[in-house]
Length: 440
Image 1: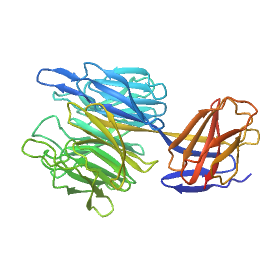
Image 2 (image 1 turned 180 degrees about the horizontal axis):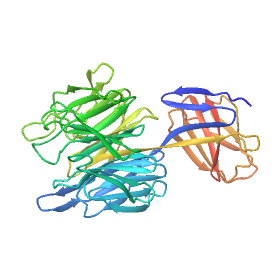
Image 3 (image 1 turned 90 degrees about the vertical axis):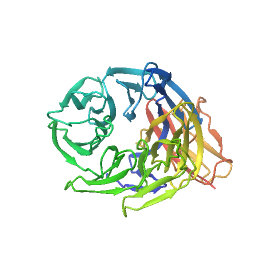
Image 4 (image 1 turned 180 degrees about the vertical axis):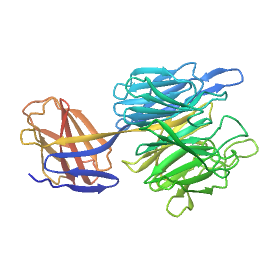
């Protein structure tokens, strides 16, 4: 039987429908890694590193782990069913459903991470010299697969890392040696486990920090000498590049690629080194121009793109007493906020898939009337005991409840729903069936 595939792009979500399969993305939770506060003079942890999860359904934030005696935390990513955290000298692996710690391994100087196939790629940086600045670990067992020493890999401390096809692109910055920062993009052949080359983007691209990919272009936000910053556009096909000065420092490189722009925070310090700028800047990758949005936020420290809902998560902190997370539209309009830990520098968006198998032998849902105004009647034979969820077309989870009654249709009150299209799904025994309805 031939398949009909209809792609609908509604506010950043693509729903693919055919005679046998349908799926939709939604954001389940946002993971926040808080660095806390560590006094490097007395070598005392004042506020510990913590990891928390923001639940979009309940709009609540809860800490699920506190890392005592850890001076720093530098990255958090989600892959498959797991959350991976880089903290000081530890790589930690958590189950993203239970939020329980699954495994931990010591990696001195761990900085940033990326995933390629079954591998976690690791960059490293420390004030003292290390024998290697690029390593690959098995993402399932956390066993070391290989490392590239300084004779056969990056020659200085490394920071950001991203993957395009089978090549890892690494920010080689030497940022831990104040006044001797470097600016290279390192290329690793992941199949051959070898270092291809190290491309010099200095002087304007010195001290690269965050790396972002769009198409075949790599973008690096560079901290230069900490008094200025720049963005380098690197063509991954012909390995040419150009660098644009941003004419101001960007702090610790807080930035994110979203909506065809690189969002970053321009730090304007007064004589007391207090940030006085409450705007975010946008670097448009098409015309290389800089624009500004106005969320009125000082001391921006972390950013993440929720591409499903078309919005940003932006964190702020004073680095010693508080941390806040803000949900912001791409134009800078603030939607919501919630308190987090001190120094929330890294975030990870947990995007999941609602899938639906509509074979003839599978249970089906019927919804009436369509369109509806105040209530809908849902029939769900064979799905008793399942979990029902309702999503809007932005992927937001609107309602969740258990269906415990057998042989009885369910009446759902929708009078407070905004007008528009919704997706109703019922999950049971690992399978999900779904049906769309319209509120008018």
